[in-house]
Image (cartoon, rainbow, N blue to C red; front, side):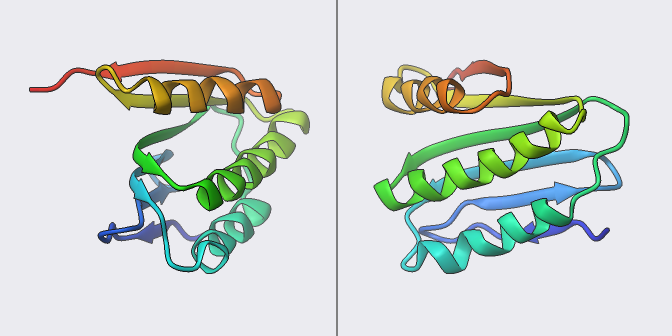
Length: 126
């Protein structure tokens, strides 16, 4: 399985899913012009993903998420959830900027919709 790397742009997050280091991160702003074309490769990659026996943590860190991206992210999380339901030891780390209640609450809402435990980390401004 190949790693997935998508560089950050002005309106899309960076995706760095590295199978060698087992670091799986999405961060930045998510309001792509075509949400489906951006998120479909992520979902396809996840469908082909074969989790190891180790604990796997997917880290999400967003500055902004559009309403169409929320729907796509739920599909990403539900695809991750399928692996967890099949026995994979998967956790979600939901990071948000200090004081950003909207992004924090988005994580809480997602956690209610999928059977994956979330951890929350508030990132303090430097």
